[in-house]
Image (cartoon, rainbow, N blue to C red; front, top):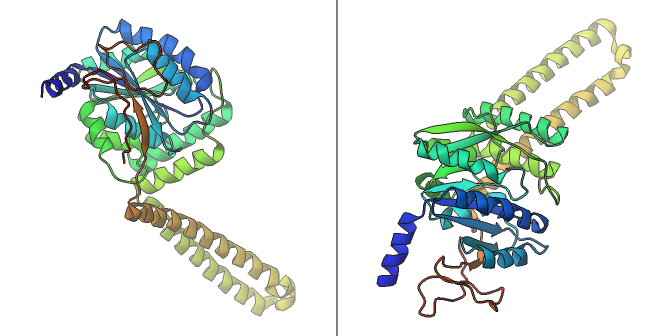
Length: 353
């Protein structure tokens, strides 16, 4: 009972949780922590850093466990396989114990030195701190694609943020836990968080080029993200599909009437019997049908995922070191040190959905 009281008191006193999803970020971890932890210590508040290894195939996990010996505030979660950045953030939200929760990328495009700006916003009473990137250092393709996604997101969701794609964002614990409890398949976190916020704000932050490795967002993943966005926030694509189908059908009927009139007036020879025109109309209609099937498939696929009830993610291992326990020099990398056991140390392994 005494141990439970101690842990509860520690949870209440923890002020900040930093959540960092990672996939194949081995080359960036050392540089990230060299900059991140001095910034956090400089804030002079209690904090924890939660890193989620999202099915990495390089030495990301080993590097994190090595760094954990230097930074006892570090908590490492490992997934049983790759579940995606969304699932990693959700796992971090559920694990987070801080009153404030900040998410960021591991590639240092979100400079850790910007975190005090978010903490200052929390101190001013804001419960949701969004950010937008000033002077973006991405290739032109990424910038153009991001502008298009932001524009479409504002139109579809009705949420008017400057930058939906910046990972450096802040949430109060209440909002983070509400998001973690959502069972919807692939929710769009920045937009959904605004539903729970009473006093949101969006502030500018700097942006830097990627220091190493390659981006995990290919063109196909960006396209998939946009489909998730459209199908999770609005029914407008289905309504637009109805209007598009009605418009194409109206054009087809009108064009058919025109062809009939011209055929009567000019005869069949003027358009080679109308064969090519009919083929063109057929292709237009087939294209419209495929668009319809694709959008309907997205919605049906989301319903299918919900009905199946498969877990959004599965945590394979959790590695913790209690702040008041020093790790032994010869500790195995698979050892997790936590509070509550008589010897002060045990390995924590669990699955979570």
